Length: 86
Image 1 (cartoon, rainbow, N blue to C red):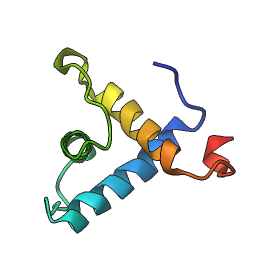
Image 2 (cartoon, rainbow, N blue to C red):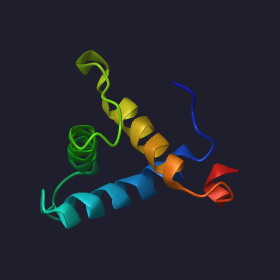
Image 3 (cartoon, rainbow, N blue to C red):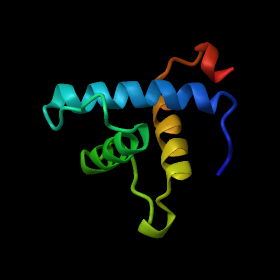
Image 4 (spheres, rainbow, N blue to C red):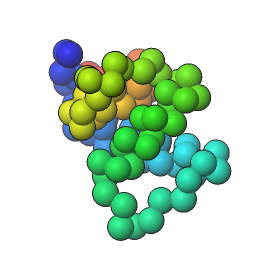
């Protein structure tokens, strides 16, 4: 797993975009008390279900790998000249 240059910022933006996507789709309504890791897992599973990203083998699913996968998914949606990609 190759670490992205601005992975923390990409993950933060990916989580926000994923939560917005899930709520806009009508799949879930997150509470303020939901943890970031719960939200990330739900967003990951929803994106896999909607065939937006490729699933990982179940034994490889961990918080770290989900963070990386969401950051990578979000990075592919950004324009080439975005500062997070440089």
